[in-house]
Amino acid sequence: MKTLIALLAWCLLLVLCWPLALLALVLWPLVWLLSLPFRLVGITFTALFAFLAALLMLPARLLGGGPRPAAASS
Image (tube, rainbow, N blue to C red; front, side):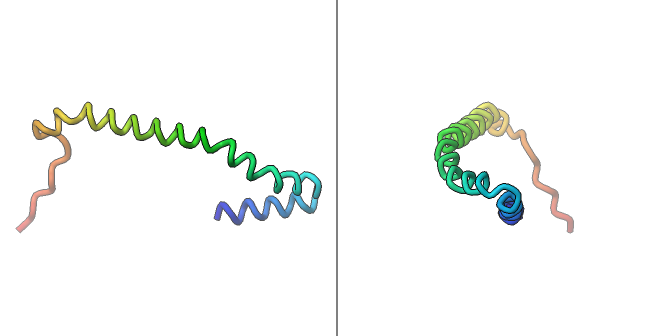
């Protein structure tokens, strides 16, 4: 759905201002390449925070904390 909206927005830009639309079409891969390091940093920080949360919650999980399984009804 996001791709369809982007395509429609680009077609509208092509009708209204075609030089800007062509410039956006040419520069989009360069912008994507420049944003790759920031995405990698974001992925790294997300993994780091997930690891720290798991490490901090480990003693409670070992002592029996955390979600309890639902009791089976008979």
